[in-house]
Length: 296
Length: 296
Image (cartoon, rainbow over all chains, first blue to last red; front, side):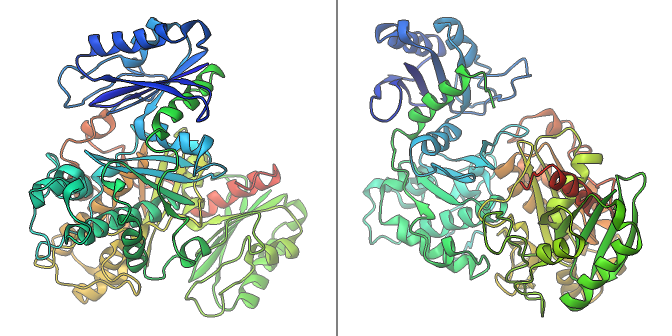
């Protein structure tokens, strides 16, 4: 049995199973680290810790992914009160005493899709989540990308036509970066209504599709993924997908000549089929890797 | 003995050696494929084809890097007359009858620096060239990134403040993408003077540094490289480096907390020490890989 912990700012999804066919999960609300981690450990003890061979954690961040660092497995400089410098991986490891894999929430999501979903068999794929924030997980040449810290695609700088959209953006660091212009809270701040309540005919959606497509073009010319998966709360609006595909093609303007792009983008820009469980399933895949001693 | 061919739009640099210590090279002007390829083969036959164990090619593009494709090793949809669909790798392989490695010119450059220069020992590095065009080579988690096609970082979309810079950009596909705003020909078109003749005090340089820094921020939040190498003709102006580092920090605005960034960027954004031979040396490294049967 594998364990997965998708550690989010609102809740921790705890999962047990071996894949999509037998996943059992429960949410634990994110309160203090002490309380939250204790309840996560309670979950695994109550539901089969005797059979537990390993656990994977996909965490909100920023996190330290360098196995050689003294802070490996910590949540680092998060603005979330109480969670700065939290040794999440170490505390779970000591509590459950099994191998623990650790990565970002979005890397877990792309890994879950690579193991069982829409990125299966691909060497290069991106999972972008558009919700409370915007973040991206990356598999390049078959490996999860970490690098110096880890990707932070929400903070891409994109063109912002102030005459079309005078909204200054919500990012406390950058104002009108991709996240500042296109995350759920930015939509709510711009239009005065939560994204989920904006009708499909609202002018908010062409603008949202434009910004997301700008972000995807930048991701595509930097990483050349074989497929981009778009998840998160805002992407629950299925009518966004054809709008984003259209904008993406307009922006690319014929530059990339490959059938995956020129023959339409229906299988290039897709909804993650495992959603909303891509992340916790990816955590099971991180657990598999940790059992094999593979921390990268 | 290893052979390297840095295939550019103006010249092919042909090299022989085993590394930076014994590189012998000659340029061959890029004319027609028939004439150019014949002269490249002549170079290797005149200078030691008996000892030649393998050749690496780093080519201008777009190119087909998929070893499973019938067009593997071809230059594909280039605007360069006569070179569309040129089977560059196949013709070199048949002419020299040794293993031939093949990648983009910029991937060769980052590989050369990873083998012998400023990316040695790094798992994640980017080489961005700013010259006649703008392009980027990527090593992520220790591997050259290809993906669906290959990275094309010149075509990043970045903010363009038309009130500060009304120049519309030179990219025939996108107008004011990074390349359209910041490549050498864009500087010449905007200011009426070639970049090399603009004095260091010219207002062109803060603007150029701003655009390059915007591109680097986008690369950094997507790939999280441990180091970025900036080469190409425009980057011969050494005063650009501190300006770009300053702009990069201003744009990032404290978001990424890592000593490589917060302790100054002198070893994060650097000039490639092997330049202008990063590329042809990387081609020798591609030859090494091809001899071992490693085409990725």
